[in-house]
Length: 437
Image (cartoon, rainbow, N blue to C red):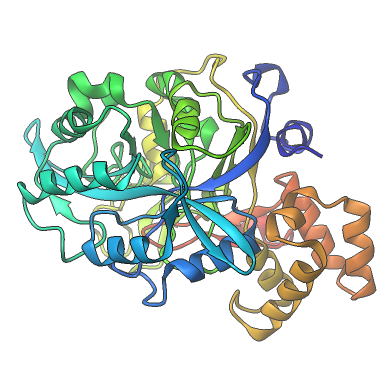
């Protein structure tokens, strides 16, 4: 079944009557455009292009961003492994298994002062070709260094960055990354703004999309009036190539004919992409308030009762995404921009929970690899395979419980103890659900 039709039919969080009609023809292309290389801080040192392609195919991702296009060593690897076939802005990896497409993408950390407050904002940017990217990097060189990290830091305001990049080439697309995370989201509690207009000034009109981040989903973002005029898209921000990181959040486009940079950008700018793949927001590392070092987390309501103070260390709590969304909510109407979306956890998480093991254990990999061998890729298993076929296959292996987890995952019928202060959320059993904080 078509992914979008299945999302509309099955995902409980969607009100079908409010979904914006999708008129585009073509095949569905699952994209993950916000990724990193081994040259970014806190990433796998084995994160190279062949490995990205290998696990994208296993996951079922159809198009990747390159990530880290400000870093010269990574640009060298891009030029070594990827080739243009024309002037459509797509760079192809080729091996014995066929071709795999990439788009040029990067992330930048802007650290600056605005309205009397220190700001730290991460932005993703998409670039049409390497020549344009060279001009962007010349601009960045006039502002500071970019050789020390795949996601470099610059003292440039959000407004100036957008203005200056669009002066280089109007095809460049700039997207606020993981917009709610406390430390580096444009709406983050620690250093963010209260509106896109406040952050981007006159350039707000040139921000066409926002990235949800793992701790929020489209429904949460649509509570903000400004978001109703933007595409609400999702990507993984992966720091390793493993399938529980790759494509954990993604955006689905419909592409007629060959994939092209302009086709992707057009759908971002006019909000005509098909849908998104999201994790449960509770799975994100900043959904609830809390202190990791104190092993304490709580809901926004409890934070209010505590007057924002941690009961363990008596210092201010790190305010998470759910709290921040509640604070900035200014729209509760029926949005014209509402789309279908999946709310699912990665397959490895389900297997590890079923086995009471880790995602990277040999036992988890053994089941995962057998399922991939049978059904082709992870998104087929999570979203497409007929449920009777899936149940029959897993029953033969005496894994009926895993089949139920996968099918419950499809309809957002799993519960997660919320993540907080850098800790991922944790899938919990039905028995433990009443104990959620």
